[in-house]
Amino acid sequence: MRLIFRTGPDALTPLHKNTGAAELFILNGWFSCEEGSGTKGDYVYEAGEVIHVAEAGNGVGALILFHEPIIGLDDSYSVSGVIDAEMVYSLAKANGPSAHIDKSRVAKALGK
Image (cartoon, rainbow, N blue to C red; front, side):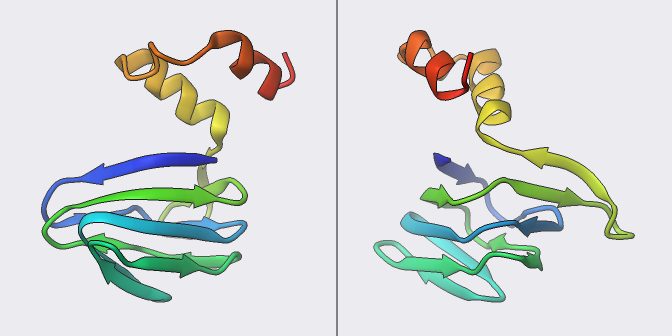
């Protein structure tokens, strides 16, 4: 799953587990997590099977490649949700930024 990720100042991600590796190319701002940090132009690699919270102090824009879905966790480390390509597409569709996407390619990619 590939996406452009943007946050405002002082953003923290919820507690989550990357089931596979994640690769970030920082477009602006800064990003930090236990595995690494970066500013504009940097590449950050997050290993798979890592449970963590990431932060973006002054906001961040990043191109992110997730190799597997992300598992959202609550404070007791129970699963609170799963972020996968289908969920991200549904959110984009509901909020407008997916209008340029060829729906037949999405259906094929999702096996529908």
